[in-house]
Image (cartoon, rainbow, N blue to C red; front, top):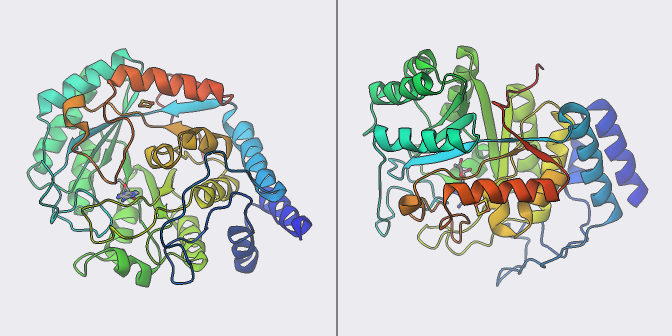
Amino acid sequence: MAEKYEELIDKLTEEGDLSDDELLALITMPTGSGEGLFPNTPQAASDPCERLPLSPSFTEAEKALFDAADRVRRREYKTAVYVRGLIEFSSFCRNDCYYCGIRRDNRNLKRYRLSCDQILSCTDQGYDLGYRTFVLQGGEDPYYTDQMICDIVSSIKERHPDCAITLSIGEKERESYQRYFDAGAERYLLRHETADTRHYSLLHPAELSLEHRKKCLFDLKEIGYQVGSGFMVGSLGQTAGCLLEDIRFLQMLMPDMIGIGPYLTHHDTPLRDCCNGSLTMTLRLTSILRLIFPYALIPATTALGTIHPLGREMGMKAGANVVMPNLSPVKVRKQYQLYDNKICTGELSSECRGCMERRTSSSGYQLVIDRGDVKAH
Ligand code: 5AD
Ligand code: FES
């Protein structure tokens, strides 16, 4: 049995792909961690939600999968871990996604917006801390007009021409994406969230469509952005079939960055009674994605660090090669609460920078001061 999985891992490593059935077998192989792999499907009898063991142990096949992914990441990127300074500049959002803590209908949240000057002071501070990429992320907040976004982007570029600017501000018109690009933004993060239409509609209100989100991603690519997509692991109704579709969609899109993290509940959302997604499944998918997309920039996400104290370290060892410490002003951090118990909400930017440096080197990798562009692919 175990041999079958190890054969699949070897084949995936060599060929960079597997048949649907083979991928499904890897996704659903038994775990040694004691975690439920699909905690929010009707089949899962996880009520109350299972607690994640503090030191999960993994089967030989799971370890072989993580190791294969680590070998491929070392072949492609050696031990480099790229670091991005994340600035969460607005917690206002016009959307009402059922899983997200900053959804429009959450009235219990104190909202904030950063001014252009506040954002620039974050990037100045970040530059001094050695960041050469800034990710500007926010809810879909119409307060920021295209002109304002362009002004923010070009002001950062003027002060720090050696830095890459990544936007993560949701679904926009193609013309808007073009304007931001012309102003100097060169990367865009927009997770597709799930590539399965039925699953998409379990997570989003009817006014949002998977089709439009996909169109945005292809527009961004055509314009010339380095594009990041990705999905949550373990959200309501997600099955192995959904994950297979996510992989197949990513193979069509061929994104430069792929961000995944466990779904985590937020007490003020309609999905408050769901269980958290699985650490194990997130690590498993991180490795599978590394083997299918050897060149990709794959972050060890904050959600991974939230679900387990060593989640980001485990993510790196399973194939992740990017970290995104928080650079937002400490006074607003608690208000960008996409999910409960989010880490790094009390630390100074300099503390997160030092913390990630230590976590990265203790895992056997090195944080590098670099724009961290994707390899040609
Ligand atoms: N749990 C985990 N990830 C979440 N995101 C939003 N809400 C949650 C949640 N409750 C993720 C989405 C989004 C990214 C910015 O954060 O995937 O794209
Ligand atoms: Fe923020 Fe560790 S990265 S405290």
